[in-house]
Image (cartoon, rainbow, N blue to C red; front, side):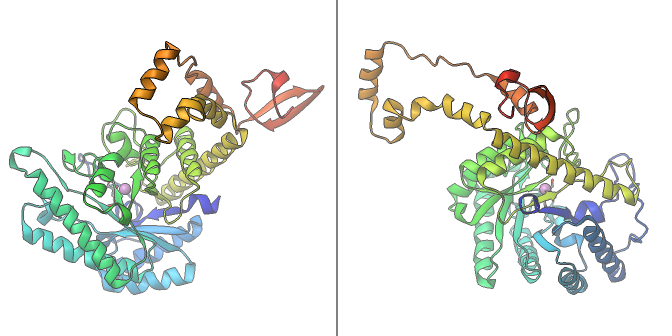
Length: 417
Ligand code: XUL
Ligand code: CO
């Protein structure tokens, strides 16, 4: 489970977020943090962060350059703490969205000097990530998008973004950084429309600008739902392109239309995520990165533990249920059967590219009608998902047995019995 889940704590929400909202100041009680930008305070924060991660038993963390500023002092301290605890850096990134200079974007700014500033900042953030032996580096397009097309040359901005990423790839090679590069899709917030809007848009962009072999995707649940997709949809799009890298594990709220970044406590969500990840064969460089924050009302230090443990337990159970569903085999069997017309005959010929419209016309004219002739069975499959992994009691051969299996088949055909 440890190898599959690869949990990671984020520095920004867990150690820098004061839990403010647009209507009120921060409520977080963080007795170790005096709220200043002093070196002493930053070092104290590093100590608390590593103590917290050690107590949780997580193997990774992630940061933005600005979260761990002042850089110089923190680099040494972080290196020492990594050595002592064995906790590793999952990925680093640069905050190219908070400072007013990035008001019109960074790599997609209308101003070339801003592009240059962003390049210098990413160069430094990559150096720091490399020095801390980070396993990856994330590009999330904070303000790489627009509010109105009236003032935006979209094609030019996209060309600039691609140029920026090519330069990052060149620099990566120059310094010998072997970590994985990721793009993190998000459709809106802070801009109205972001260029990296969803997995498909990112893949298209990477392909168009010949960057696909250098990047994978870091997918975040709440970003998927903001884009009008499920997380599983985004995962499957990335997996189909061989480009799923890592996940930012959180969830949104059904009734709120913004990025609430809640800790993932929904078993259906984590089960779906783990089903896709297991199908892919597991994460390699990536991890389950809790890009999540406790609610403004959960302001005590202890809530940081409760929140992470809730997320970790939900993913652990999701993994167990997903593994049980795979072991059970009925979902896979159903899918295999559903597509079986492609395995032989005309289906196999189409898949192999061994036929054409003319032959297909002759084939179907002879046959007369195409009859899909099979139900999609959505409700049955949803019931099946409810089953495996749950402990059911079943009376078998006179004795009450407990086993992990679904109760949707008649008891007489219940395989464990
Ligand atoms: C913002 C977001 C970022 C990225 C890293 O919504 O998810 O924190 O993960 O910049
Ligand atoms: Co994120």
